[in-house]
Amino acid sequence: MAKRITPDETRVWFAGRMRERADYGLGKAIVDLMFRPRNPFNLKERRKFRGAFLSALAWLGAAVAVFVYFNFGL
Image 1 (cartoon, helix red, strand yellow):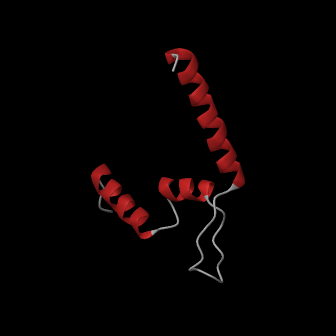
Image 2 (cartoon, one colour):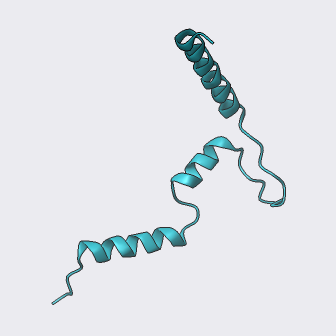
Image 3 (cartoon, helix red, strand yellow):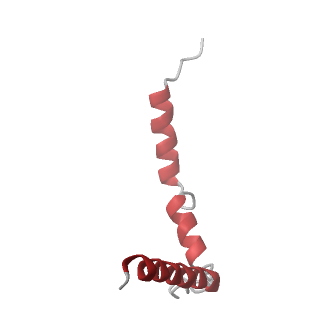
């Protein structure tokens, strides 16, 4: 008969497997949305921001500024 595995054992196993894989995860997904893909031939080169991310950040900043201006009368 096969050994039964508890949910806690499964959770520990899954967390360990996810730590081994650096290419998975929410942090990696967020960084990939913010920056252009890395050049595989020049790993020392810094990644540049994506244009869509910068424009979304500018629109968000403008919306916050308008909200603050009209609600707090600065």
